Image (cartoon, rainbow, N blue to C red):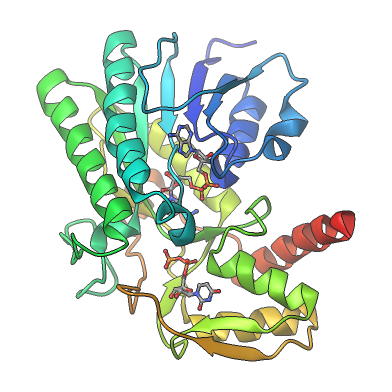
Length: 318
Ligand code: NAD
Ligand code: UDP
């Protein structure tokens, strides 16, 4: 193997995004250590990697200190779906904050580069649109989403304090809604919910009137953005928005999925969850400039690939 082969730690590596990242890192010739407590991740997501000598999986909770020797760390461990991060909110904050402290401590000790999977949720229910990295956000610190939003904000603070205080080589990505194969069928997020409901011919559960907007990025585009940011010089810390700026109302997403699946499902309206952001769309000027990155997968193409994945999964289970 060439001189660029690195030892890379991916926390949350058995989750949706983490499993795609592990695969890409191995394809690029690296050794990958996947650390996951399988709270929302699944061994099935990494089953195809388990036989490879460059891949190792470890069941571990990042709220405990970890002692390994690595060159790079991607810190993804944290439930991402509202129903999962609200299931045990105290544990969600612990995972974000104590997990960040532990992984930053590891990065400092072994002088590794470390990338934090932050989120557009740091902007809360945004009052500027689209969201730029300078925007400081509008988060309710007391609401049901706060365990996640404030946990991720505190993690960003820790990353920048480690950078200022210890010169730890940090990279912070603010991820906007990302979808694709290997989302959990019961994940609760909108794309997986709508596709599974459409494929089963069940009613599509639209929260609120469906006028709230989101912008959806396909997983392969996101992983490319991660790896480009990790490869930048040490001066480049972020935060950098990574997401697809093609914004649509959630109602339109439901209609598209019904059309693409050829489903007979009807739409049923459910109450809008508390603090559900009314609009969200990334300004990706910085990612374009710094990384030469922009998304390449169109929404209908990404949805078609995700529908194929769930069709196969549901057929295997029936
Ligand atoms: P996911 O739930 O599929 O993956 C999270 C993984 O972290 C799971 O495998 C889970 O088992 C693991 N995990 C949770 N707590 C842990 C702990 N204490 N110790 C070790 N492992 C733990 O979600 P995802 O969509 O793959 O998200 C990955 C990361 O990206 C998360 O940090 C999330 O906040 C961030 N993110 C994702 C999105 C998105 O749209 N997918 C958007 C914004 C931010
Ligand atoms: N949503 C919905 N029906 C569902 C799941 C989600 O209408 O079955 C809505 C949700 O209220 C939000 C949007 O879809 O406005 C995106 O929700 P998701 O949980 O995927 O992520 P969020 O962006 O809110 O973190």
